[in-house]
Image (cartoon, rainbow, N blue to C red):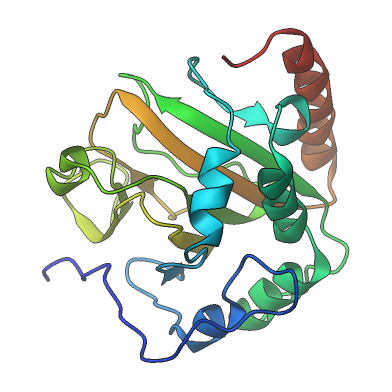
Length: 228
């Protein structure tokens, strides 16, 4: 079966609550897909002009790895975006689309700004993470057209070419999926600037509490050691 197209053009205008940066109407209107696992891809979830304002407020990250947003120097629009992603309206929208109860789920939010040679290897996320949310904040570039750094949702854990969906990391595209033992994903090697916000709704078990403790410690340490 050929991979599905990531592109989906919806016919309506962006609709926002006062002060919102996110297009919830587009999220509500985009079908939930099931191949190769349950997920949703929403293009332009952060439409212009808000997207440009957010990107201008991101730190100039020169180091690889994930940085807790609490340890980064974000501009005001960047902080507004992170707060909205952790807010109740977005939580409720995600829960409704997937039929989940996320009311008491702790959240963990990180930002990546650089992709390294070792990044993108095939993996599934930790079982402490109920749901993974990825929000891509990059402009169009030739690398994405060559499919470098474009996240692939895979049918197995061994073959990066056995993918059902490929998601270019551009223009405020949102990807959400509930985690499971077969939610394999990865991307072709890309080295360079690649901004992605990762939000996870965590479980309430001991493993999740341990990850959240490490996250808080990491946020504190990375305030002392900037990403730039």
